[in-house]
Length: 178
Image (cartoon, rainbow, N blue to C red):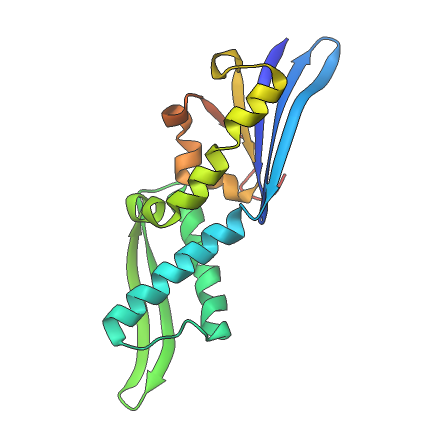
């Protein structure tokens, strides 16, 4: 049989399972999950970064403006998808705010390193679930034949570049939840 580690990084939760697949079928050896770690939290971390950048450039604090936050969340999701395929992306939000001097726009360059710096705590929380699910299954990283990442937030570049955590990843799906 083949032993898989399946990681489903959804919008607001992460679920991991150690699964054996063989001629007799599929057996789930262990599973574990956690709410509060997922794509929405990554989006919020990027929104906080964008708000801080906008504030530093304009001295305007938009942190409590829910319309601005919603626009930034959309931009964060798009940026995360772009960074799964390229090293950097541009974030442009026109007419984010206006004052007597006229409209203010947000124009930022986001690269993978900046993205990971802003999301490191969330990414670490995702990765921290790997050892517990392996322990429950009585497996070690070396026993895993394949890592399968599903769910839209699984496109987070550092999760896809899993050589750093001891696996070779297979991406399932087109970036949407599978």
